[in-house]
Amino acid sequence: MQDNPWQRALAQLQSTIELTDAHPDLHARLKEPDTIVEVDVPVEMDNGTTKIFRGYRVQHNNMRGPYKGGLRFHPQVDLDEAKALAFWMTMKNALVGVPFGGGKGGIEVDPKELSAGELERLTRNFARELAHVIGPEKDVPAPDVGSTAQMMHWIADEYSKHIGEHSPSVVTGKPVEHGGSEGRTEATGYGGGYVLEAMLTKLGKEDAKTVAIQGFGNVGSYLAEYLEAHGFRIVGLSDSKGGIHMPEGIDIKAAEKYKKEKGSLIGFGSTTMSSEDVLELPVDILVPAALENAITEKNAPDIKASIVLELANGPTTLEADKILHEKGTIVIPDILANAGGVAVSYFEWEQNRNGEEWSKEDVLMRLKEKMENAATRVFVESEAKKISLRDAAYIVALKSLGGTAVE
Ligand code: NAD
Image 1 (tube, rainbow, N blue to C red):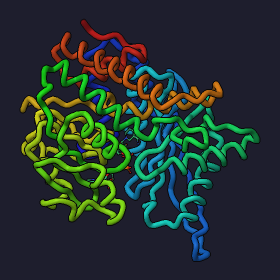
Image 2 (cartoon, rainbow, N blue to C red; image 1 turned 45 degrees about the horizontal axis):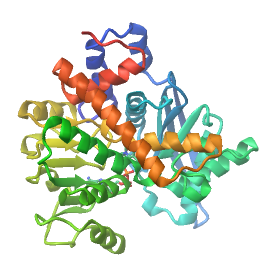
Image 3 (tube, helix red, strand yellow; image 1 turned 90 degrees about the vertical axis):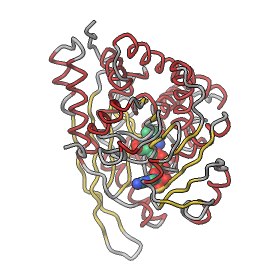
């Protein structure tokens, strides 16, 4: 059960409901998604054949506004994963205070195996299949694992053709030249950095400086850049092919350049190890920034970091969470730590609707304020009730959805 993200999401919901006076109707509304859309997406491949790809869009809840959440392009995408990710979006958006509900979707595909043309046709066809259920006031997708700003532009373009009017605010995370926001690409990684710094100060742990990061994609790389520039030392880093350990500190720009040229981090620096070994390095702060279920009951006992910053969605299983809690490891939960992406997605949506273009400086200033406010609310709740930051984050989110915490 622990590996099924949807079962885990339901267990988290159940335990939070028990800590609050939430009306049973709220529990009933949150424990099932509002709508599930499953589509077959045909794509003409370069060799002339037609291949069918399975796609999903889960609209979990829209009590606070249009459904909002990413589209994942990955071979392991499935419905239960999409349901869990959509639920976490509902909670995250409520926690960080953006006027959105929760949604998520994706396609079972390895985008690296498609040519540029095939990927464009797949994305455009998927957008056409979803055109009747998405919309700026209905459901607003965004990038996630395996999807890019360019793909968001294709979706906006296809949707605009479908409804017969220019409608960039149907998706966020677009390239800046196509209505995207400055700072969106950096938002999740930088947002994680803002939350981490705020929490370390509140916890009196400003001396925590060494970091290991699992996942060196959009989120992991911008977090690494931010932390390196703010006095932290990144000593471990991994991607899906393997990891590296450099106790003297990794030069992040050089690592990015190397990965771009060679396709992986393997061979960069002194010690190469498996992706999983990076999780167990002797560091102050561990950042899972790849996929779900990275920290399990198997490796949790061997995790040496005293702080875990969850930038991936759902990286810690329930059993692992218990083990970390018993060891005294502080876990800064995903729905808080990685909310920077959706916060700037909200800024992008606002700019599109009002015909505005905010500077990067302005966007990052607003992002920092939002993330620090959310971190403060979570910390205060956790101190007041002597509960974990995760339980506190869920209570703050549930309160925004209409639940009242038990005093
Ligand atoms: P991405 O596709 O840009 O990068 C994913 C990275 O994880 C890649 O470097 C890949 O090689 C690596 N990876 C995959 N399996 C791995 C493994 N077993 N060990 C080590 N590395 C592995 O995706 P992303 O946008 O950076 O998203 C990463 C996580 O952050 C996901 O859980 C996503 O849901 C979450 N997230 C993303 C955003 C966003 O704005 N992009 C927002 C909130 C949360």
